[in-house]
Image 1 (cartoon, rainbow, N blue to C red):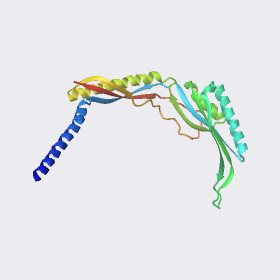
Image 2 (cartoon, rainbow, N blue to C red; image 1 turned 180 degrees about the vertical axis):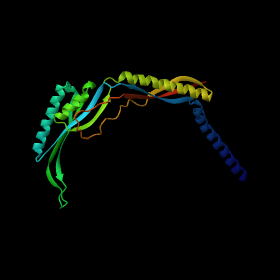
Image 3 (spheres, one colour; image 1 turned 90 degrees about the vertical axis):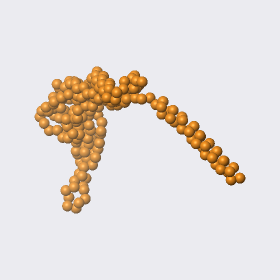
Image 4 (spheres, rainbow, N blue to C red; image 1 turned 30 degrees about the horizontal axis):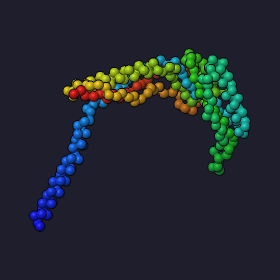
Length: 241
């Protein structure tokens, strides 16, 4: 009876070991089937002279009543839009937005309680200037006609595709060279390209002015500089057998 129990225990142990081995075999086989690859990234940047400016200008007016503030702001905005049109800015390159009407408070009283003394009405106009030679002139003109806020000036390309495609080609070449370097350093042969994906897009220079900054100048000098467009790609190569 004791010998039979011992045999049963041994048989159960060997059966469990065989089952564990059978379950482990597919895992080892799956790991062995995993392709050997080299994954690399490549980045490149291309600079170009801008041919487009984006400006954000605004009109802000204060009055004792909300209606008066809105009326004064509307008159100033209409004058600015008329000046922009006279400067050759197309209607499709002008867009108004960010309309606000807020109470104005006086905090100078000794009682500590603020006293409302009027309203401030404001709006912003987003403008695209396609002739950069006129940009300083346009800024001077709109300030003279009622614009008293400048939200920002930035530069861009009207058609970014050619420069961005050049950056993409350079990024792929950088990634390919990096993969060849890694393969040589590791003592393996680079195989076929398995996948290629793009990681990023383009970037433009920061605006010349911070948002909401007041502008008070008879003449506005403008330096367009260059626009930098960047591309980043990821390439996955097989390692040749």
